[in-house]
Amino acid sequence: MTTEPSEATGADGSTAADETGSFSLDVERRTIGDAISSYRGRLKSGDPGALPSVLGLVMLVVIFSQVSPRFLTANNIGNLPGQGAYIALIALGLIFVLLLGEIDLSAGTCGGICAGFAAQAVFSGGLRHGVPGLLYGIVIVSMVVSIGLGLWLKTYTGPVIVAIGLVIMFTGLDDHVVYALIFAISVGAAVGLFTGFMVARVGIPSFIVTLALFLTWQGVLLFVLGSQPISTSSYPFWNGLANGNMSPFWSWVYVIVLVGGYTAYTVLKSIRATRRGLSADSMQLVLVRAGVLAAIGIAIVVFANQNRNPNPGLKIQGIPWAATVPMTLMIFCTIALTKTTWGRHLFATGGNAEAARRAGIDVRKIKISAFVTCSCFGALGGIFLASATGGVQLDLGAGNILLFSVAAAVIGGTSLFGGRGKARDAIIGALVIVIIPNGIGLKPSLPTQYNNIITGMVLLLAAGVDAVSRRRSLSSR
Image (cartoon, rainbow, N blue to C red; front, side, top):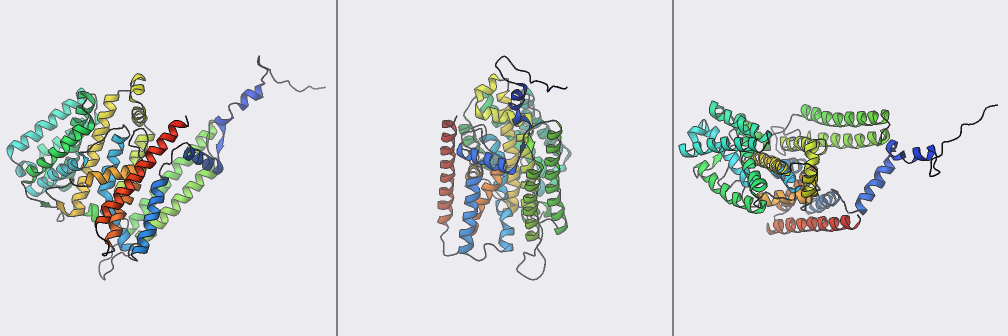
């Protein structure tokens, strides 16, 4: 006769089965229903994510499609990325600073001087021939000092980027468009190192530092350009950034690579977690997400590959470069924020700087690296702005550029209080910002004043949602 093995009983009367059951969440497969319930829970706890901005985007599309039948035409939709890419890029950089609860008011004018240096270098056959000797010497000294400053502060990525720019200057390669644009990003890194030093090391509030630099860079740009604007439309590569398109074939390749890469990553992640007995998304949930992404990607490519030229002649087809570049950079930013130690330290510092410092995080280093990233993206934004406007004007990056970029990040869902935000916020928010003037412009009877009024109200609404959700999040703890 055999007997059933008895379960071991602990001192508190619990059995082994009870102990195993207490860890059931560690091996759960997250289903579609679980994902929906989890999202509802985040909403109730005061974390709406990108939902308000997405709903606002849909509402604007519906309104403007009724205002003008031209709004949803292929030609108009295809022009949107070129009109808003610079906002998305500057907003991408600002997200890293906003996550810390800081601000960079000079990101727009920083982009202006960076684009100005690049344009002058290409136009004059090298920067050394395009600017006065004193200014050229100041640029070299400033970049060398920024490298030393970065090494002293133990931030190495920024100094490497600046050093690449110095090599380009000394070798005379800055008379080529591509190298000149790389040099522009190096200038942005040097600016970011200085800004980060003043904020993190000296201790001056970021609002004051960047406001002073906002004014300073406007004056520097006039010196760089010699008070004369420089056209960029004659340089095909530069002009194509905001006005060119991928070919229909490469548009398909681009989307296939993105969707395929995401699907492969999520599937492998689920399989590995299952094998290790860890909590993971079920394969059904993974495939549903991949299917939705694939459907969106296919729809975009099919739409983009239509001939958008309303006139006979040259066909305008393919996904605009002004869409693929920000999207690709958004993916890299997302990886940096969510899959690296640096990204986790950035969120920790933004959530509670003192707690992060006590946990052993170098808060100063994190802040400096965030400002370097912001200024580099500001330089990219300035490059795309020059491409969109056809040249580097005397006030490039000034005016409402910075305001619209900050608004894009906040409207997308990034918190002004720090500690909450995603790279996708910049893209979604930029779409909202660019759709408003685009839709109003299609209706000549609507005064342009509506642009600022609507944008301001949308920003105020986004900031209100942020404040309310933050208060609900604190009260639910």
